[in-house]
Length: 313
Image (cartoon, rainbow, N blue to C red):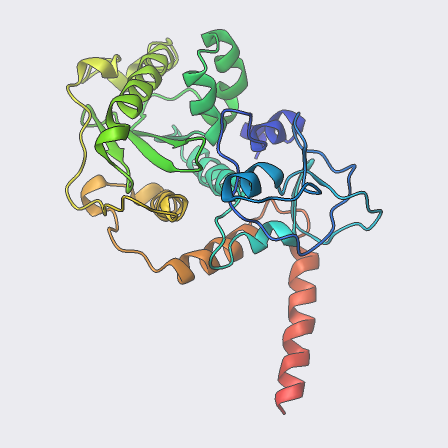
């Protein structure tokens, strides 16, 4: 946990900027304190949404103001990052997981990866790709991500970079340092996306090369060039499902990310049970050791379960 510095600097990575997709259709099932803000941006859910795009733009679980003094029940809290019950409703069927849900799973995977010394896997939050594509200076990106998400290592094997587009379509870049290959996992792959996404991925690789070439990481590249743009074309693995109109791209990324240390492109699951994955993700987040309200949630869940059992008896 110390690797991620439990401060607002961690939490500011969990609110999407204007260039990042906003979560789809999260229901207003619970009022949220208007003073609750994570990161720099805040959206207003009081405006009516007439289209799916408007719904996306009007709702952000991390910071929704409804002008109410009612404080919602928090099911996840890590420093100043808080996700209320309404945020977990985005994991219900027909809704799309909020971007905070994705980033908490990435944070969990990163924390576990940092426990293996030297670290072998880097996981980046969704804002990393946004910052790179927006051409932020390397020094700005280095200060923001290096110690918390990309620690120095002499045994780096994989870098996983999720990319979220404005339409809230996700795809995953997998940089296989061990074998000198770059993979592109995208269930919405289509000809009209090829040029734009290819350009974005090459931009990300150029930035990663600057991280790789830092003296603290160079031992990881004794067998392969530290410049991944020299490794050959980006590969699209056989077996990746293809859906032209896919609202489940975020779920596929969650599915692949949660393979964690067992990651191998050849062994990735190409099938998914969306309902089980949604439940697994919600349970995993609530039970994370870094969740400061874990004990409270567990106690309440136990009380509800006992009540259900008594009613059945």
